[in-house]
Image 1 (cartoon, each protein chain N blue to C red):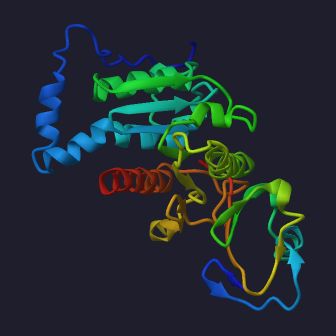
Image 2: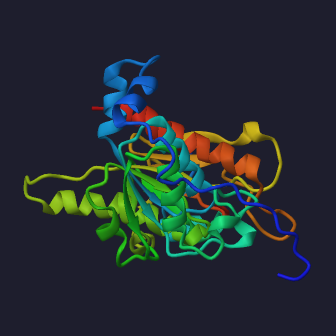
Image 3: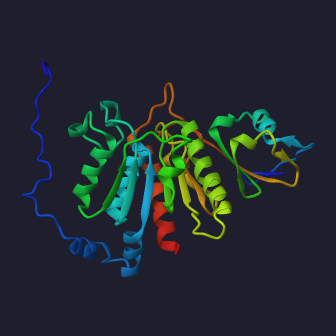
Length: 238
Length: 64
């Protein structure tokens, strides 16, 4: 620790804090919206694949908005290089992202239901991890992983529906992110409807690479597009 | 053929794999929908495009 200044840390949420009840949170959340709107959000579950700059911000926005249940998927641990754009703080360095994010979300809404999947998503396990979830956010960093997830969700769910012989079918919405590096015009980041079940947010162009890193504002703008589309789909749909 | 909302002419039928290559896409980084149906990567070679088709190509770039 030599050479590092010690800064007093703010206290973590503890038993001494007065935790608002589920009912108190509900009351403030639906003051301006209808009860029905809030109930739809409360009943909904969203799976988030990747808990980096996009996924961690999406999770915070959805938790604040009153989504009832989140499945958080990532194999990684929090590193110092993440703090420029992800919602973690120095308390979380070295912790599993699933655990660190769960702590953060419970501090925002202690009643949210969280399912933590501390695993790398692959072609082999993607369907197993996501099956049954109606709303899926793709929030990986790697473009090939993004493409893999899109194929698994969109093609895989279709194949399963075709083979289900009239059983319960799974027809998920996928909201993906592509192109949010740098500090170029934030207005170039938009939500594109590929079809009624598949949306892509981002400028679809600016990639992270040499000379162009990821920065908090554009990453958060893109995460906001993804979270907003999910909320629209939940409230607008049945 | 309509690609991402823009009309373009396809003079002769080509495979989706060929089309992606000639347009400079990396097969491993795209999601492609042909006439409203997602095409899995394993079928890029067999999917033949004609001028009547509608394609949606999502080209993923790194960062998240």
